[in-house]
Image 1 (spheres, rainbow, N blue to C red):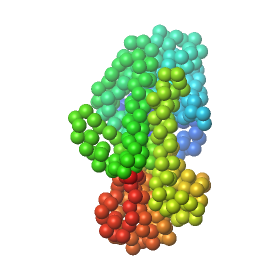
Image 2 (image 1 turned 60 degrees about the horizontal axis):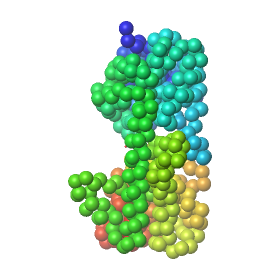
Image 3 (image 1 turned 60 degrees about the vertical axis):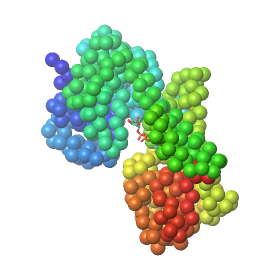
Image 4 (image 1 turned 30 degrees about the vertical axis):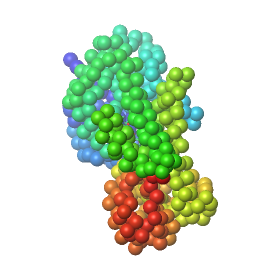
Length: 424
Ligand code: SAJ
């Protein structure tokens, strides 16, 4: 008989959709979170995070009785760890949540159970950190119980669909563990399932996001070269991308979010002597906000003191409300440090409160009294702005576009002097 009862530890962006999806597919699920506020909120049928479709899914799972929210793990046939792995100030991975989640499983672990780590983790975490903790139960990983690593690779905004449809990688500490993991996820995954060992699965996840980080870094470096040599990077990239084997990504104000700007550090930390390229890509992307400030200085003069800047967009990328590791916030902070009077508006989170920054809840407020408009995030609502209408709302006649979101001819026709990132 397969898995009947699942215990999911960590009810965030990955754990909550996963727990609810197992429940709506007929398994009995205990969703566990150490945060009392999260437990209370969910028990009342409310959500502590935003994701399209998630409220309906969670409420259906709770109503069916198949999903129960708890503060501590309970006995189950399978345990899934989906807790955060942030990093310390010195960029070392903070595995404390993974470790305490694994420790909390130990008293409940029995022969034949399956444990899956989903949290993004440095190579060898499953085999060398999680396995020894679980073995304090007296049971042996891969012998008495199954142990797997299976990373989540969904895109915020479409988590529910991608959770089911994306290809999934499942790495076991033994082939039998991997098979047990495959059996569990086959309950709802319709995408292809690739079975491998746990360290390969850890590397797959880290390589995917590192690959993307390095590719954005080269786009950002190209934008600096274009600026130096007086060409338009956006035109150059679009021509280069007609080559059948070239696909240059978009430059911008930097790389943010809790995945791509974090995961490469796990590899650099694990093997600093052989990762100069990965390390340098992180440095290039983290320095991109300073490049944006240089562009603002070109538009407004070296001395930015007292300059009134309307910052448009604070989230880490277009059309999401997620502010984590956002390069737009970094740009706004650097401008404040340089003496600018910044008013920042984030349409996906108009009520955002950010330490050290003045945020406003409407576009009108951001534009009022501004001398310069600084477009940092490619939200649809910003791309769709009518420059003639904007000109009526603000005295500013300088527009700085860091994401190639505004057609410069139209903005110039409306009376704006336009500066674009990567256009010398
Ligand atoms: N960015 C650019 N230029 C580009 C593309 C992205 O500057 O051409 C920036 C974005 O603005 C953002 C950052 O990179 O600041 C990351 O955005 P993203 O859309 O590349 O990725 P995430 O962090 O939203 O989601 C990624 C995804 N990974 C890959 O595409 C390889 C997703 O599949 C993963 O599930 C997720 O990380 C994760 O959780 O690891």
